[in-house]
Image (cartoon, rainbow, N blue to C red; front, side):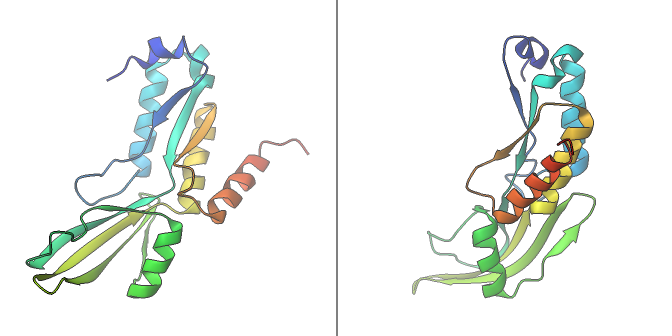
Length: 178
């Protein structure tokens, strides 16, 4: 790990990664309780006079994992893939997926089946999705605001959609004087 306290003294901004909680196995990307633990941990490590240098890295994407495989998949069958709002909306529509909101993680999830056949081998993958939408981004922005840190950084630019930008603008408007 890094000595955030020592680093903070020598930098203008200290970006903390609060995403990729689940990578190898299906699960939430940045569950709210874990994000709070990340914030609390860095604020304990960084002297108070440098808290205004801390920037919380938050996700605007998700992952799509295979969880169950029946059959012998072709070599080029997808493993874990990234999803963003543009690809997600299309996937939900094509597969008739019913997303489920999880208030405790501040994320969405869903499952669906994918049939893969290359003419030589075939399989059916049960796939699990986890992602953060604009409301989830807003929840994490509010956590950063309550912590009194500098702000947030999205990972990664280009993954977000207009809803995320609109949520960020609405959230930032709270800090503007009338």
